[in-house]
Length: 474
Image (tube, rainbow, N blue to C red; front, side, top):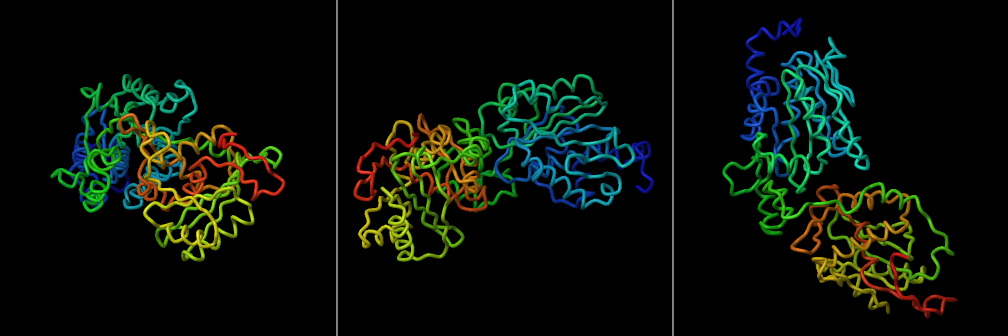
């Protein structure tokens, strides 16, 4: 392959094999033991103008997309490839990083292609032989979103949509248009089936006859399951939540849920709350409330959240506290701040020692079980869903968060919900912890301040004898 040019490579038997069977290219260049679905997807790719992978969690679909991109760059003359994902961070941290990973394993790719943070290009033909990373705005209109994949004109064109389960339909319009004027064109998308709308859902339902569909299943009892999905993990999810749970359907079985899975709130709204701050006269005589999330495991933190009406103050995190230390710490914070009420997470019994300790100290904490019934059982499956939705509504109506609460930002924007019948159901906390890499302790302490209505306690609040009804959104 020394002295490689497009014309010389096009004449070799090796190039023909790689063009015809991309799985051979992956084995030759990377020495990978392919999963069944990966080999099927790779070898159907050259003959499928539209290919979609509807996948469970963790089977290796992003690696498969990266292999297709490298195969197309190597085997087609002067190709143009546009890649996008559900957001800029996912594109950069996952797909684009995956491309760099496999380039570093191939002498051929290192010699012939340059990798940058937004572009891969041929060293010999940088202007006409490339792949580009493209992002889109969720707040843009349909015309602006469709422009994400616009502007590609070449004989060989490839569009890659990673994590397309939550993408808008508008992103597909430009890609479809480009296929009409090229010699060889492909649209490849992959994602978890989280939404009952968008490009992935359309491909798997009403447009199924136009697409080659690769279904990737992590079901431990399915003989064609994806081997990279842990059987132990899959069985645990099924045992804990049941086979009909929407997150089990999406993440283990790679199936569409009964209702779309949506984010609680967008990052822009939470970031706006982190920029707000209210002075005492703006807060008025609103109740002072403490929310206490007690650590469950060694890597979790116990967190105190202080909220007065529309203002949340800095979170206080503590590790390795026993029950007596925790109860004493909360009692001091309660007295120093003259709190009107304190709510403690009693889910699983982890907060019992703190609760009992506070009672011995003469305090009257309120224990809250996240799995308990909601005040509005017709709308929410449990208390956890209700508290999180009340918190989100408070933010949207002007609530202020401390500027440094990035863990709260991640917890609120990464937590998703769907419907169980007509009731709102949140994604399991264990799934959030796995997604974030840590437990959403600050988020849980914040939502606890919305657990119950609270009125000002005159005996505790010097100079404020008037009681007020609780309004969390004021």
